[in-house]
Amino acid sequence: MASLRRFRLPASPVENSVEGRAFVFSSFAVAVLAVVLYGEDYIVPAIGVAAAAVGHVVSYRERAQKRGTRRQVLLAGLVFASLAYFIADSVGGLFGGVLPQANFAILLVAITSFDLKTRRNCYSSFWISLAILYLAAVYAWDYAFGILVALWVICLAGFWMTLARFKGTEGTVVCDTRTYEGRITNLVVANCQFFGGGMHVAPKATPTDGRLDVLIQIGTKADYVAAITKVFKGRHIPSPAIKEYKARRVEVTTKTPLRVEADGELLGMTPATFQLYENALRLKV
Image (cartoon, rainbow, N blue to C red; front, side, top):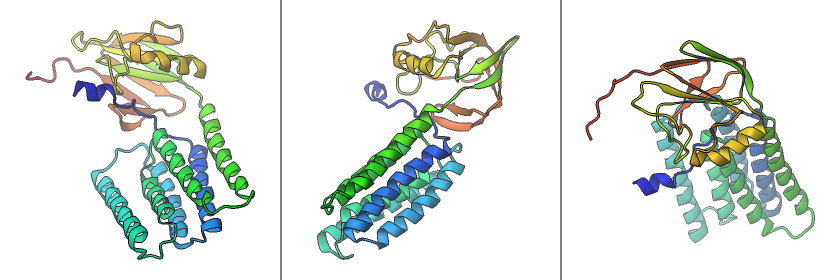
């Protein structure tokens, strides 16, 4: 189990950018257009684009909510139904046998669009749309197809640009009797040292000292990226770009609401209060 946890991917941040999500959807629409123009396939692409549009709206509105079990079961069932359609159409041609691989990928993007919460989810949608574009390229024999490829690349570049626009916010963090006021790029409140599949985010934290470790990233985006490269070994602190506190109770208010995540699950948005209840749990080892 320890080896499996070591290779878990770090938690991916929730994608809050409307523009970024629009670029994800647009890349899918471009790929589907290629299938329509060069594969002369119409029904599944039309259904897929309409469903994906609704899915993106739902995902954005529910991005800060926990994933429900019923929704996950329903989406998994639809994925398996799409796989059954792909097998039936590719082997027996029951639905005409027109681009079954592309149609399966289109349905896959449409279904998963209802669960695009994180940035990693958005990248997954990008790569599937690229696969759809590749399948359409099999039927493309002219240079005009390059225009569609260029449009897809523009969508990817636009998504990256929305990430580059990320900015911190002004806020106040009250740690017992001490108060920090100023810029907040990221904030960690921890009682243990590790999270996110091996990120040594709070190397000084001790679960038995009766205090929460608070790390406030106050630097620029460049400082934030630099810290990410060091956090797996716990070498991101000490740093002039990170304020360190210890407290039993932490109150956070921000000018722009920030997401609150605990163990990879979304709990809501700031303002938020964290409090340590000492010896609240009994563990049998």
